[in-house]
Amino acid sequence: MADTPEELQKHLKAYTIVGAALLVFTVITVAVTYVDFGHTFANVGIGLGIATFKAGLVAYIFMHLNHERAMIYRILVFTFFFVAGMFLLFMLAQADPITRFR
Image 1 (spheres, rainbow, N blue to C red):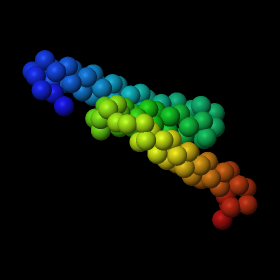
Image 2 (cartoon, one colour):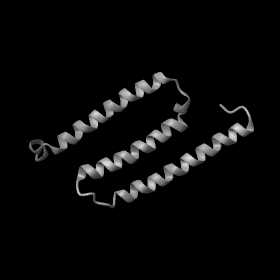
Image 3 (tube, rainbow, N blue to C red):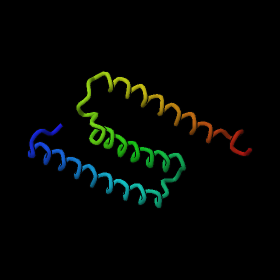
Image 4 (cartoon, rainbow, N blue to C red):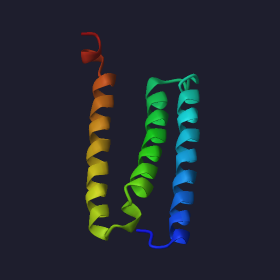
């Protein structure tokens, strides 16, 4: 971590910038909910895209993944594909006309 006051100021500046970016993207997320993109999947996809970007910022900066070894990134890639597959299965189940009207 930071050993000198200069290094601490550098980290503090990065945390402040990322915190401000998270606030801005939260406002964008709320604004996007008022826009109709024509289809529910488009609305959900855009919302999830913004949320994924915000989660990536938190993990990369606040959880210090930018200082990790390459092995953690391999695990994160598999986790990302697993989560993406689960979201895809959920969206396919929502689009199924047989199960939609139960």
